[in-house]
Length: 232
Image (cartoon, rainbow, N blue to C red; front, side):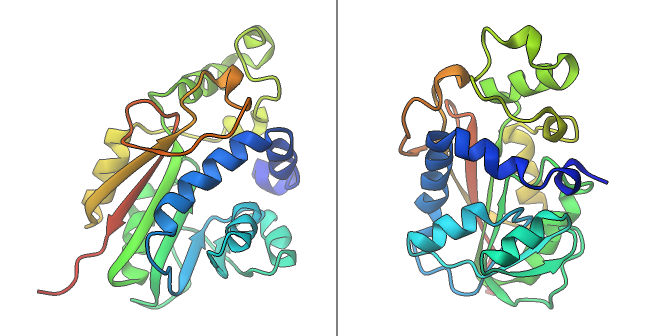
């Protein structure tokens, strides 16, 4: 049983205590999701549906999701159509979606290459994938690696006032932007674009929400948008 099964409400409680971090990450997703109509959109690993509910309130409707854990029951209560399943084996046919979102997901899947290949499979030609995650080379990524081994107590002088639950950190594998880029291009996505947020030290990242900025050289949370090539 994963931490997301045994403590499904902890995720929402953490973001409630870090509302400005949530808003910063939400704005990052909106940076790409508001560029064009999302069409039929799928969230892979939607968790509790917290972000999807907030996106809907901002005019971006992602009504379908795949979630392997008990958190999917919370997402269903938020009005999402939730299918129990894994990112590596999506329960859909080829080319059914215009947009696929993987927000904070690839750190937790067993086979990220297969997960992104599945995302491409279910996307129509010209469809978008958006991958957003804590990156390994950022301050949060480094702090999370330390905390997963040592716990938060030895890091209390430099950690956020309300740190991320350890049970979620210990099952994650953080990846660099270079690794994420390689996974996306290896799955056949092209025309990659990058945006970032959480540019302050983690101890102060909840002080105020941030607007996203292009690139990936400063932010601890990075989003990458990739295009499914259209036929020639």
